[in-house]
Image 1 (tube, rainbow, N blue to C red):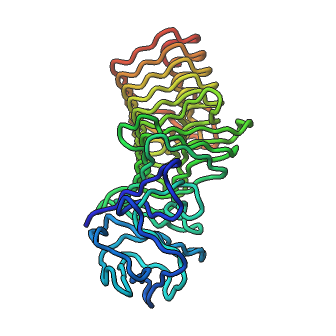
Image 2: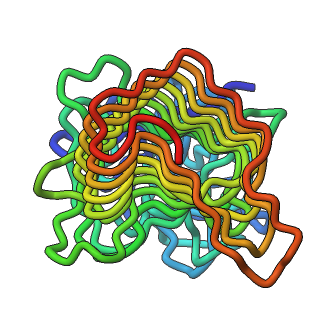
Image 3: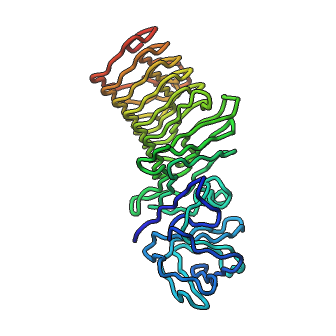
Length: 373
């Protein structure tokens, strides 16, 4: 079975499109219906389905405003092309017994934050319509402003693969998602997602709570690749706070945060090849009591207002161990290049951080110290 790539373009996209199918959308207004199972959709009479794939890579959009009802479905069968009652069958059911709905197959959608498209990620507080293996792709030059937190609730899996939100590979102009709230932007509430090749900005004048990407609930096993969170004016308070386990942050440009670049990592997080710079506080900061097995390789951490790397043992539990630092460059930070501090707490068994490995790191021109404290 193939998986769909749903396309978004803020300039050429339209609302009545599914984003995956023929380049020119097939569509109809207030004339689609579903059977008693919600799996078979009857379309506008005379619709030619010749160019509609049934491999699972084409999607039908069915505009159903009922709370919790699916709006996007992967097409696995078709019948009656060009006749009085052309139909498509989907792999996941729409609402049963529907009538008089707008529909579309193919074309390009306009905005991921629009009411209908947002259901791909979060449908009435439950898992979104996008399924494991699906890709949501923003084309070159795509821009949009999102006014509130963007929750991602459906999980990818190890069988069909992760779910992906990405910019088009090799885009001449990187897609930009601009958030206007002083709060969380993208909240990862479930597992197995790829986020890659786009830029994030925040235009809210108050920089006290805005976090570009944050893990919540079971939001683990998230890969963030080639994402830019580094606008000197439209900055975030913090860029990435994984919180949960298995995050992999790679080749990102993270900068100008009003607080820290990356902080609060969980079990087995990887931070590789990133440029983390010009943040008001620390470049990388961690005080999680469950942060074990962290790996930092090939990062350039420079010109931050606090420490390059800052780790705090709260005393509530052992902060963790098995930290590996290979080939990082930590330079021109106002604080220390690398600092570990222990804060006594209720638990007397706290041992601080254990099992540190340093190999081929460069410390240069940090104001307070070039090595760990």
